[in-house]
Length: 161
Image 1 (cartoon, rainbow, N blue to C red):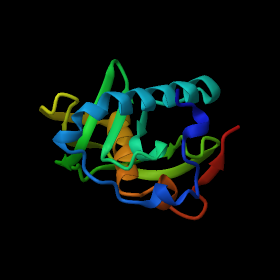
Image 2 (image 1 turned 180 degrees about the vertical axis):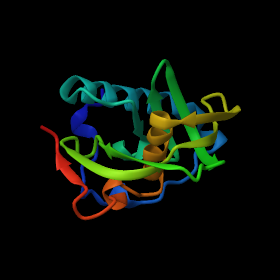
Image 3 (image 1 turned 45 degrees about the vertical axis):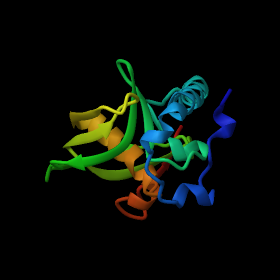
Image 4 (image 1 turned 120 degrees about the vertical axis):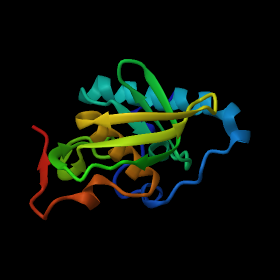
């Protein structure tokens, strides 16, 4: 069972690596990866009270995959963005790899998420606002980008109280 202790922490070099695609031949591994992501996220929710998504590299699974648990679980494989809005918004972002730190960032208000699901079927999902921010955050992890690297300025950091 994966827990909060299995989540890679800020400074771990693996968090800065670009992930490899998930291949169709690896589809049999996806349910186990998704279960591990789910377990770690549930532990974060229990300890810190937040968590809607987690990226595979946060558990050292260096694949282009993330897991969301919103109204239902979503397994996102090999995501790509289209139709990024010109309109941006600012928010305080948090991350399971540094759960006590908030970072002020700008994100696109809306976008279309193209991906493969756990059955290898192509999906397209138009997202806005909080969900748009969430998928951008998780997608960044797949490219080795942390929200600390997207901070608006040097004063865009705050400890959670």
